Amino acid sequence: MSRNGRARRTPDCSAAGPRPRARLRHERRRADGAGQAFVIGVLTSAADFERAAAWRLCDAPDYETYLRDTADLLAEARRGFDTVRARMFHPQDFEEFCLLHGLDPAEPGARDRYLVNPPLQTQLLAYQGEDLAGDFLPRLVRARENGLTLRHADLLLDGGLYEEHGRAVREAYQRGAEVFRRMLVGAGSGVYELRLAVDAPGGRLTAAARVLQWEDGVVRINDEDLELVCAVLCAGLARELPGLAVLHGTQGSAAACGAGDGAAGPTGDGTADRAFRGAAWAWASSGQGWAPTAAAVRLEGVAAEPGYSLGTVR
Picture: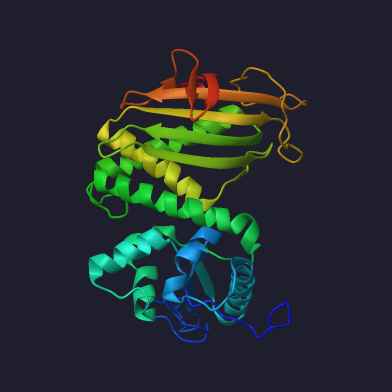
């Protein structure tokens, strides 16, 4: 039963069908033969819910009921499956997918094929019991955006982002990861957001990641955001593309750091004052490497001063 006492309505945006007991065609089994995977597509807004109504994805009368039913289904799936993953069910993407493959959007098989389409696997997130309507829905939206950017980056690298196609891409990825690491080490403990833009053929590559860094150097960042940042840095370095990066937020004890509004310049030595202090640093790349900007810049509405030299950070 649902929370309002009506018979439970089960969303039908899952590759496992209306109930999570059926096996998935794409599931991966562990070596001991135990464990199954469950994948579900989630409508992330009331507008998308209305747009998808014609396809009879579920019988929920409104979006609020749909979210409750979907949360119940995810909880049930976690009890019955080893792995539960979700991705944003984007109506326009689904329509275009069906048109491309000659599928009827109202057929359950079309939804299954859309959810497990290999080029879209980067949009999948593991569901571990998070509040669906809280943090998880925005993460699903970002995962779709991230996935589209990852596909763009992979095309720029001739498919080398996920396959071992050559030393040059591997080295560029390692260099990009090291650039990001030095940005964080130099910033010290605190709560930050990195905004990254690389000018590329076919359109600008962008990435954003929220980072919580503790005094002992431990970093908390969503895996999908870390993957995206490293991929964009990799593509920029491998293809020698110009770019701009801004790291901004609040320096201070990450254990208590929230959204402080203090103003202070960067320390550049990895230390932080006891008092929280606002900070914003910027770096630019001509394609060969990353260095502090020559002057103050603004990226996506965030103003930043030239950053510290990454070469001096260890």
